[in-house]
Image 1 (cartoon, helix red, strand yellow):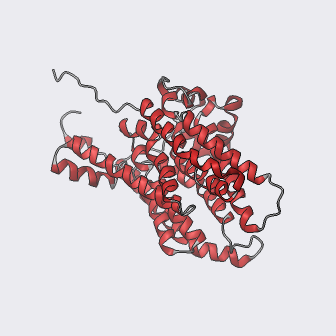
Image 2 (cartoon, rainbow, N blue to C red):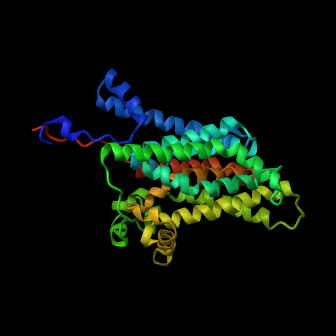
Length: 363
C-alpha cells in the first residue's frame, strides 16, 4: 500500500449484496455497526428460511423452529462469521435454495424455482465455497426431493418433461452465476486458482475429535457438533431404523419419507467424512476420491467448508423422524425428548463459541 488508492483497485464479488447492508450500517454509525448489522440480518434470514423449509415437512411450529435454530447455533457458523469469512454470511442462502427447490419440485411453483435460482446467483457473489458446494450438491437435493413427489413416475417421460419445465429458472440463474463470476475475475485481473496439494489441504484439516472436543484448537475447533446434537441425530436415526424395520406392509406414500431419510443420512455421513479432508476415515479415501472425480474440488484448501451444507442435513434429520415417531404409538413418547436435546446443543455450542473482542493498544 503506497497510499495510491488507484493502485489498490481490485473489484471482486466477495461480500457482494451484503455490502449494501454494511454500507447502511456504516453510514448510520460506523464500520463496526455496519458489520454487526450485516451479521444480524444474515443470521435471522437464515433462521427464517430454515423455519419455512422445516414447515414444509411438519405442521408442528415448535419442532420446526427447534430444527431451524440449528442453522444459527452451530459453532461452525459463528467461527466463520466472527472470523470475517464470507462463508458465514453466504450460509444464509442454502436454506433459501432448498426452500425454493422444494416448492418447485413438489408444488411445481415458478416462485420456488426463481427463489432457488436467485439463491444460486447470490451464492456466486459472496463466497465461492457456498456456491461450489451448493451447485455440487444440487443434483442430490433434487433427487431426494423428487423421491417425495406423489405424482412423479420414474418410467414416464412426461414426469421428466414436467420437472424440466419446473426447474429451468434454476439452470438459467446458474449460467448467469458462472457468467458474472467470470466477469468479476476479468475486472480484477485474477488468475485461475491453482489446485491445492494434498499436503496443503492436510495442514488445514481437522481431526474427528473436533466434533466433540470443547477445547480443540486450530482447524479442529471449527467442526464442533457436541454430544447433544449428535444424540438428537442418533435418536432420529434409530427412530427411522425402527420404523423402517417394522413388518407391516406400506404403500408408496409411507415408503417415500423413509427412503428420503435414508438418502439424507447417507449424505450427512459423507459430508462429515469430507469435512475432515485427508484426515477422514481410511486416510481420507472419500476426500481423495472426490478430488480425482471432480477436479475443481482440488482447489478447496479448507475441507471443513463443506459444513455450509450441514445445517440443512441436520434440519431434515431432526424433523422427519420425529414426525414418524408421532405416527407410531410405541415411539410417541420420544417426541418429548427433542427440546431437552436442543437445549443441550445450545449450551454446548455457547461453551464452544467465544464472541469476545481483543483490545489492542492503539500505540
